[in-house]
Length: 354
Length: 174
Image (cartoon, rainbow over all chains, first blue to last red; front, side, top):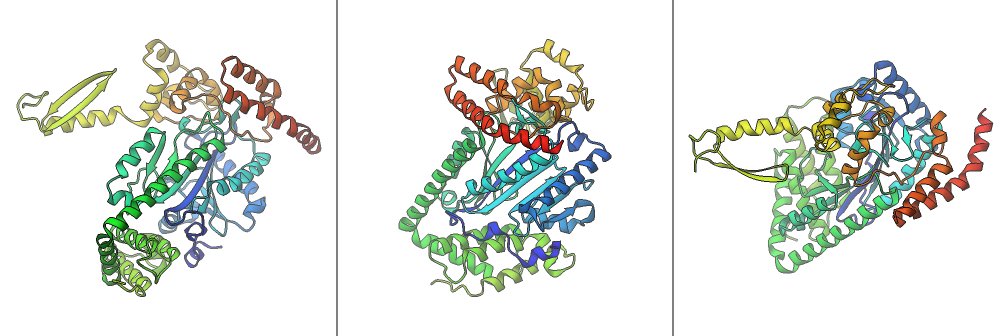
């Protein structure tokens, strides 16, 4: 697979096929691993980093899960390619920054990705559609077992897997779930929910992870603590927390439907109206309006497009995707026009006021 | 109300500062608030926060820690304080005394109960042996940490199951 092939192909986690996929976009598990003795990426010299890159990619590509997977070295990619991978959640923004001796390994369905020489020697992640942390864990646990047979991981019995930052020590695991919570935002209950989450030592972030703000009612919730609980407990904890939030969002949607139906229909119709007719639109506005269209679909107000198409629009209207589709660099004004054109085309089937 | 710092301009920014459990309210003008916020940003880098957590106000301990250096990768404890990142896996053993309390502060625990690599190379392998686990189990039982004890018991069982298989693999490799 070449990087351009990603465009003709939709990521598995966008398919809206998993449990609770009306409210939960995706589930992700990430494990941080390091090789023993060798310095962590920020402290390693070139020789060490190259050694890690070779050892990890050789072992990884031998395993069944990654047969036919693509290895992309950061040094071979241009800025646009790297941004495309970030927009598809296949690697972090940090990984795109300094190119030296970094790589990402991706399977064809974009379920598995393995960053080499990010903050730790190995950052592997498995993404699933909907609320499906346990399946993600099943897969990543097997990948980790395989790699552990091939590579000597830095590990202490008392402290678990040793990571560059002590906030990841222990299981090295972070489970994250991306939620779409428009009704909790509209009913102003979201701050109460987020405050409760942070008290339980979970963190909330925006659509693109660390350091990003919540836009379009999307929230990414993940565990903060990685030591002192085993992997299953951590996943159980996130899972039960997410289930409660899903229930609350569901109740808020019901309440809005029964008490404020016309307000809701108005917002959904206006949002799809703007998206169907705009000729220039920013990515921020697109996300916010698409959020309303998605809610409209969930509540049965919009029927002519399905959830997967809406999910996909969130990704393909991002800057690098637009430029890759056009196959040239676009200024921000040109991007806003191209974005509006794509959205108009995709949503033209929607009948307003129905 | 006049600004608490310059006492000239009127205060438009109101801050609550907590230093050593002492709450302090500050009323500042915009100019002084801007300066103050620069100071605060400098104070609260992640690395400082992490290192700060490790030392909990024991200057003597801090002085001793300054000279520590990882024998494997040469990162000093001071480097860790500055960057908030360790240099290699061996740093954990080198700075064990300081990292233990830090991990406990961050995670609320400093004992790993999750999975462990099936095969750990060289000297490390010996550390994950049954006796180590059994010692931990005993400690947990003594401390009446029964949930932890149950985990350890499971780990030991698992380990006993895996042991013969792994040994076979090892001999094959040699």
